[in-house]
Picture (tube, rainbow, N blue to C red):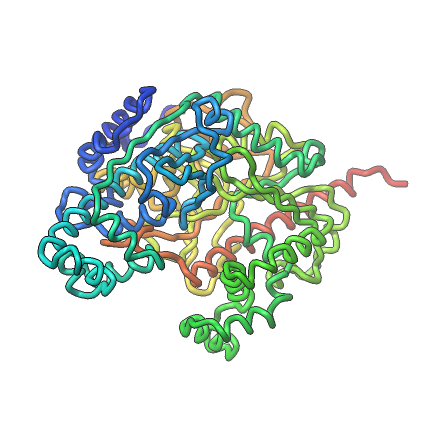
Length: 577
């Protein structure tokens, strides 16, 4: 069916995309400075003050959170799909130092001198990395110029003291609010003064090199990823599978009950934690003066505790407990950073499950199940298409596909849950219509702080920076309010799981009548139409647990319901003795 929705292409965004893809075709290193003007001309909603003299703190913080801290020592960023691609390019990356970003999951290695190697799983990683690097360099160099001017005023000897004080004089000199300076100091961490002095000392002149942009390399990397998962659980090739794209903590927490068993230890940790806000929340939960669930709080506390030297000792204990509950973790190796979990439904113990998962009739029927649940740490953009396509080709049979992840929302608030039944995919230019197995009634009973918005329209964008006001206005006028990066890619794979041809391009696609279950749920982490409010400006913090676990509850309860019906149907079909 030919597409009838209006074109959403922004000329400025399209120019930016064409520019950096044409440059990356070169075998030479590309200077990021050649992209600065076209990046600023895009008028990105995430970088609205790119051309102003004053720093755009939301864009700077966004970059700091999504790039490894070593970026301040880096001059060259190399992109490749696998170890073999880096080897052919002359980079023995597995001998380098593994490094990570706070808020972006990507396998990266640092040579401890000036080169950063980043593994990419699809074209979407390029659409993420290049704008982030460009925005970061623009904002670094703004700070550099302002710090140089401050140094001329106070003298080189006094500059370290002014930076360390991080007070109103420094905020005024940097043309930012004191609140933004305090957040910058918090994000930079204990090396704040050292990192700021490095910015003052020299401008940033990043270069980037793409080793291979071929589709075959992305496919090969995906195949390597799956072989690692299948090696850990060979039964995947023969058993029916429920596929879930979410995260690596919420399903496991609810299915094994480890955090609930560690309640005494976690409460003891909280009592010694210097966090009055969290302590106040726990006391309110205990006194039932707030409606928050203690399970969600303990899940959140476990994650914080395991980030401490003392808490890290419990990771092995948790892994052993999860294995007893039929949960096997599979870390990604030699390719992109997407961990997986394989869960044996017949080994789940109803006695330790989160209470929200227990229906009136119990879950004893799971003992007869031969199904596996494959849960992956949600990938970025088009990697979702590659992964689901590979899984569908390799497993015995797909019984359901469930996608749960973060999204931006144009008509909701942070912590809300959005359930779409229409998804426009900017990658394929298709608009997918489908029967979402989830409705507001599946999530609302478990959601304390937010609102559930179902029957919504979502758009899968190419990258977080690749939207501007005109782009958003087109979608908003057409009723698209849910903005994310994976749903459209997954639906393109779903089409190919049901139809005999590759997914179409630029069409309205009807996905009703699938032979397996399909559900997509997004929890809101960003409201881009709120001034100064984006993913660089805030985080979900503890309250994000509410929407995450309400959504996880709905996903697991749905899988149990579908599996019960499947097992009952098998009994009906079996011949009587």
